[in-house]
Image (cartoon, rainbow, N blue to C red):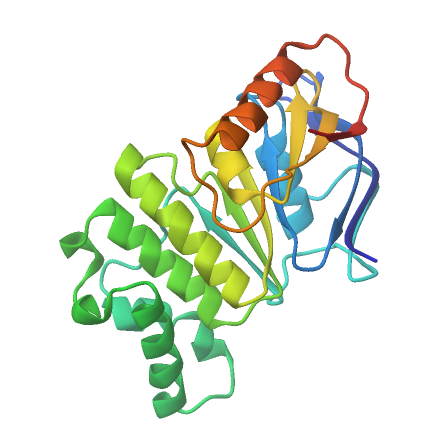
Length: 258
């Protein structure tokens, strides 16, 4: 059963000169509960705009987007978004940043602290929970933002190129962390990236978008289960097939099994 349903959705912006710009057009996609979906494409293909429409920040101008049967009309506390910019409050400690979303709930100070401690430990930052963000590396700050997102127990985690500004080694480590955390917490994840290897490593399915305007070129079932070795023949086979798909001329919006 579909958890997120996108039916013939389009997003049109009116520019300052009065002309219209179509970010994505006629997108249809069904996402099951617990799936890890990567939206993959070059810059300008509308993948971030599509994610923002699902998250309720910038609604589709035609078609429909539903989550759990309800039309998306605004952001909801049932799902969270993690951006490339960590969005941490510089005057708050790691502990207090993670507690931020919990402050809207009817929880005692002790309950908030206990939940924050759990997720700070999960991302390996217990020794830094009293530090301010400026004392942390970029990778550590992104771990704080992940802990803050998971602490409020969202049904869906939207992630918009969250590791784009990080070095390759830190990026790979955080990919492992995100997989472990979201699988253990049984979260539905929609993850935007332009990195093919990242999409193959993370996703159950990869949605490849083509630009001008953004359309679904194809949806790829990733046949790799469990731990994924980035150097294995199977991994490289999937990665190479996606390179080939990017070079195909047609945009068929088809399910593609490698």
